Length: 286
Image 1: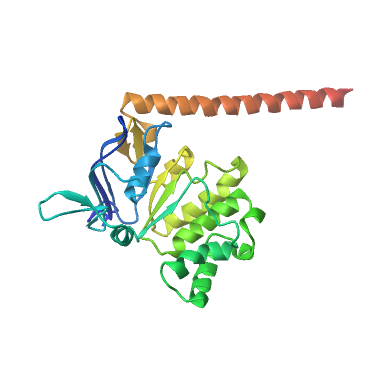
Image 2 (image 1 turned 120 degrees about the horizontal axis):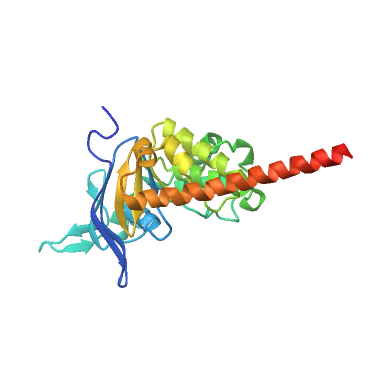
């Protein structure tokens, strides 16, 4: 069975979201299947992060349906057939299998790395401290931070803090992981360590939806890439077709802009290296 066969573990049907008169999500349909990795790309302001937050009801969508493992998220129908918002306890129960990693790490500054990972285990799952600590240590090891368990966030690099945030989400044993531009707040040299952890999760079969500007990561890891613009899905498909042979003019424009920007940087660096080499040769000739 391929990843796109069988029932979707996360399904969106006609999802809409507005802020005042501004339509941010305009009728999105999307299915996410078990062990599938979907990367959502698009220009800033296209609704990518809002869509991701609707998937676990951090943003309350205005219309349509979000279904997690067969259960409607956030709403139910009353006796008259009218849709009403669920109580928070019902919402929390429905989305319990969904983990989320944000752009910013949102770690408690007064807690160690291990305490950040285990807090929800003890408070939400009522897990005994010894068991929570054992699972927390296992999750920190999974993201390569066994030696940082006793460190406070202020003593960790941005990449390490984001890996603690991933460990915290994994400790809740989710069936789906949502990542909202997890490397956007990191220095360039720290991006790789976070992406490597995410590659490992994908290889293990974790179901993942990732909003990202990291095109190389999307091309390498995603089973499917979704391109959004103006609150709609414009095009989607496997990375080979979406990046190699885009059909929609808006996607071609977006990718061309990205290629030009990156090509310009590469040209600039190449020119700087050549200039450095020439100056070195001149000094050596003297």
